[in-house]
Amino acid sequence: MAGVLRGAAVKPAEGLAAGSLAAGPSATWPADAPSTTGLATGSDLLRWRAEACLTVLSGTAGMEAMMAAVKVHAVNGFDEAAQAIAAPITSPGDQTAQDMGIQAEVACAMTVSERTAGALLGESHVLTTDLPLTFSALQTGTISWQHARIMVDETVNLDPAGKHAMEAHFLDPDAVNAARGGPAGELFPGRFRAKARTWRERHHPVSIEKRRARGVQDRRVEYAPDRDGMAWLSAYLPADQAAGIWDRTTAAARALQGSDESRTLTQLRADVAADWLLGGESDLIPSPKAQVLVTVPVFALLGLTDEPAMLDGYGPIPPSMARRLVAGGADSFHRVLIDPRDGAALEIGRSSYRVTKAQRQWLRLRDGKCPFPGCSNQSLDNEADHLLAWAHGGTTGISNLSQPCHKHHRLRHTTGWTPTPATKNEPPGWTSPTGRHYTSEHPDWEPPKWPGMKDPEFYAGAVPDGGTPPDDPLDEESYPDEASFLTSGMPSVT
Image (cartoon, rainbow, N blue to C red; front, top):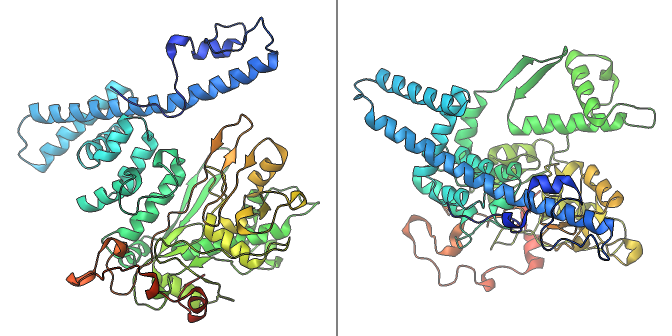
């Protein structure tokens, strides 16, 4: 199977095998390796070895994806053949029995559980019949098997047009309103799921209000015993309630931290939650008000559109939930000018060293989370940081600020990892100690909906109810100037 490996090229003929890398400097090296008899030092060899290992790791990711595509092709081919040669189906029971037999055969051939085999059969069928762009990307190694499974999962219950649109958004760089921030395969799988789910919530043919109403009926608390005298207790709740509980518990846990406190923040969260639920001594701990950051398109806030709002740390929520959060306890509002062309917020600038509250809010809007690749730490827990230190001439403008979580803030200041420059609309990337550059995830903004518009892609000529599009729906003269826009109440409310 032909394909392209992600990362630097790997040439097996040059002897770049895992065994030779592990053997150390005495192994057989590729032609471009530093000389062991010339001026090269031991540190040169170690640096080259480190770079070679990273090259192999990058290349194997692509090879694993292509092997997954081979498996998908084989599993689906076996399913089709087995279905064709089986006895005619005369009842639903016959179909169930036939499916069970096929699952059992695949499970035995692969030495996996029948449940795993059944999931693979279902995923393979969807990939080969409904998601051609995803399967093609898997075959060429540009996305991983995890990415492909996420695409299958997030397109469940979408009609064929919706599945095609979602694939095109993430995998077709020439699509209208294609995803920002680079190829989907360069996103960590967990972050790709977050973006894919956000897109699904925005474009699902069934209103998010109706889907949320169905989901509320399934709310529950679950208990599961675990090893070593431990157990899991989890709750399935509406997103605003869950986010409020999490933020309130975190604030209480942080209040307990100090030089005399040996428990970690994670342990403190668990202890605070347990004491609150059981009515223990922690009832004496002041119960902080939940800090919830929600971004609401102004027309959705006014009830003129059903466009989802964004709850920080979660994703899209129904506009009715956002309106309830705003009406039921918001101490203040932050009006943010949103570019109607692409949904990006505009910069707020300051020149003093101290990062203002407005700038911190803007960083949350720009980055959405810790900007380190793959990190999902939500913005309310993160720390403001100057990319170029103030002492070295750095400013306190948005383009010189980042909001890493505590772990990656420490990583930046104690190791060779360094952030790269940011812009008003894009978070900083990162350069590793080996010199490799890794881009940060970009928030996947979309133009806001205007009342009466069925789809935010009005710039592409989409006009509701068969109307006639204007000659230039984005004529800048049709929009108020920035000062008027800021004072008119038109921007989204955060």
